[in-house]
Amino acid sequence: MDGNSPAPGARVRPRKPAGLFDTPVFTDPTARALAHVGVIDVGSNSVRLVVFDGAARSPAYFFNEKVLCGLGRGLAETGRLNPEGRERAMATLKRFALLARGMRLTNLTMVATAAMREAEDGPEFRTQIEAVTGLRMRVIDGPEEARLSAQGVLTGWPEATGLVCDIGGNSMELAVIGGREVRAAVTSALGPFRLQQVGGGKKGLRAHIGDILNGLRDEVGSHHDALYLVGGSWRAIARLDMERRGYPLKVLHEYAMTPKTIRKTIDWIATQGESDLRRMSGISAERMSLVPLACQVLRQLVHVFGPRNVYISSYGIREGILYEQMPDALRARDPLIEACHFMEHASARLPGFGKKLYNFLLPLYRNRPPERLRLIRAACLLHDVNWRAHPDYRADACFDTTTRANLGGLDHMGRVYLGIALMYRYKTSGMRPRIKEIAGLLSDKDLAEAKMLGRALRFGAMFSMDGPENAGELRYFPKKGVLELILERETQALFGDVAAQRFAALANQMGASAKTRVRRAHNSNGTAGAGSDDSGVSSGASGSSSSD
Image (cartoon, rainbow, N blue to C red; front, side, top):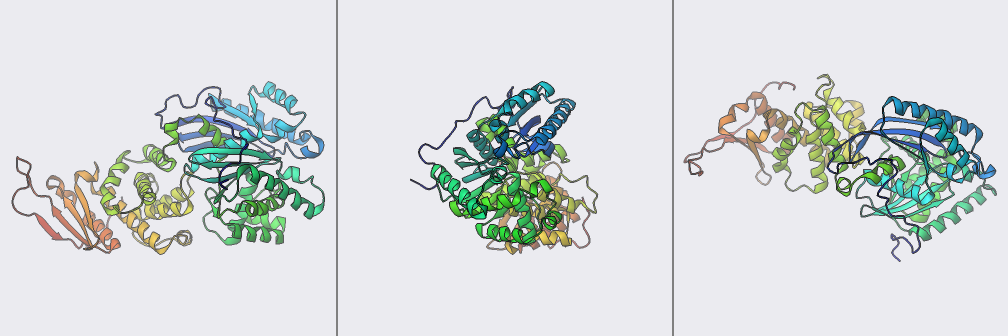
């Protein structure tokens, strides 16, 4: 059997067309935007309300609140929900119901996972919740939870291939993804609350975890190159990994680790005091109490499945529930580009200009791979979304917007590349120390390319307000080292001093000579007239260029 294929008999559940919402979320398959769709997730450790908004394919968080209730604490020992957890969960859900009413949510669903499905008093508490809040609770089983979490990963990584692992308080789910599908989905009792009840000391706990993981390997296959981690305990470990490494970009989504760095971090955590770890990371006491057990599971998880790379996903079951509703045509769209389109239309001065700018600059990037072209396209769409920021801080605002935005389909190197490019769209030189530290994540080559893109955006964005393609055409001859701008005869006056300065700066960043000429006039039959209108090589104008 192929190690990446699910074993025969692995528990796979087909996608449910109706989803978990009472009414369809996407009534129009061509819709590009989403408006106030809520999900309440009642987990073994936390209860969370998320309200999605923004781009349909890459939803943003209009509202996001989590309370660590600990419903499943002690469940393995008593078989019942934690009494204090019940009180906190009820108070939280009453608040969420009122918030949903205040936001006038017309599409809200509530799902519950391991604690509610396993506790003997789960059905009674569910009835009580529904009576008090007026909300309907759907209790899902383990494989369903695994599948939805995996779909959450696909929301941010459409092309993701590998193993998804979602850890909660009382369970841990695994799912195999590839080809934009969930291929297998299984559940286990490896949640930290349950592991607290395992006897035999460290040796007994290690053997218990190993036995369960080896059984899971038989169901979902082994040797997955990529492991995608979902869940608060995994995110806490990743946050601590950032602290140990001195990693400068504090964005957990798509944060990458390796088994080697994970082992180093787990060993390092064991040598630190809990208060010190909390102080440096901001992790709550409730979450930190589960980290040591989660570390033991993660150490064996990477050993048993042997991934080359491990990624943190901030997307999980809640996003997976939304993904469930997406038509296939919507799922096929690029989440990064869709989010950038939405941001442009919401915040740019001239919505739609980004596409024109991309087409104008495309001759500079003819031989770039698709992965780089999508970043260039994203930069063009985002080039103007921070125009309202104060001119003295506009460059920094561009950098921060991109590196800190809730964007799917964008790894950390891509975030920094976009941030540097958009910063240099407004900035002429230099970086603040904090930005310079983050920029160090890029190679020298990628950093130079990002600066070049910034110079290109800086020129193209101001060359013509109705679209640069109406004013001229760019041509690049890398072997000759020439960057040429062909000006349209009717609009050649647009190439004034400031435009000339910025065009020269772009050519200089590319290591090319800047050449301009006016397009030849055409006869009535459409052929070029006699004579050349070459204006020669432009070295650029002197003096300071104005800010836009």
